[in-house]
Length: 356
Image 1 (cartoon, helix red, strand yellow):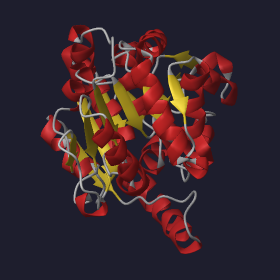
Image 2 (cartoon, one colour):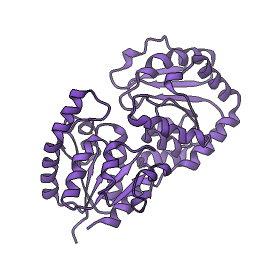
Image 3 (tube, one colour):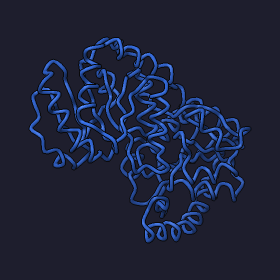
């Protein structure tokens, strides 16, 4: 019997790509074959092949939330993308197709539906994106990260799996020490960095770090964005463009500060890491704020919207977390209750259930 073949369509951002890689690793571990399809010129070209997987690319461009000319470009690229992915599907003959969401996966999923190839989509955010809302009507199964996402899809198709995270994060979570005090703060702007964190927040971090030399801080700016940080950093505040080993960094930290994409949310929960979440205000359908509210409502995080950010309130919050370690301990326990470290394996089980 030939090995089951899986096509994963993921791209655009690390939040779509890295969970796809986590699923691919689980699929290969059970003896299957994997092919990735992504957008030409996208981040996936830099990430997927080094992870050991074959990648084919097609033309694709975002439409939602973009300027009129960019939406037009995305609409014009769609038919060509569907045509190209149809050819790839016919050559590879997958047993099942997995769409990780976003503009980069829409053409592949549409082609899979047209060819009647079993289709599973992953909805990573609490508020589904436009592509997945459309695809949910034709997909065989929908894997959701958040429980409340189910209300946007046909209930019979939904499986609550959580958002897949890497084996490195799972391993780091298994070995990390219990949080008992505020000793190290990590500030991550995501794979591309975040200007607000690099500028506004960096100044407040420097002030707080100077007054608290017994706490180590790290600010990750994003590749080639170090110049956005204009502070004079005290000795206990490290500023770096990129972090190679994020799982180990998170495992050695006692507080995460940053954006609230689904990838970051489920990584910090797996590591039982308390967090201060500052959602990206430009995220489609404000999905980062909705993600953050899930953690805030569970007392696993503090939600601090960027549009209403106040320096004094932020500094007071850090002081309080340092002064009251029991609050950190409670947030850590709440985050752990939300964790789904087995999510990649759960998605693979859903895929196996619809394979042809």
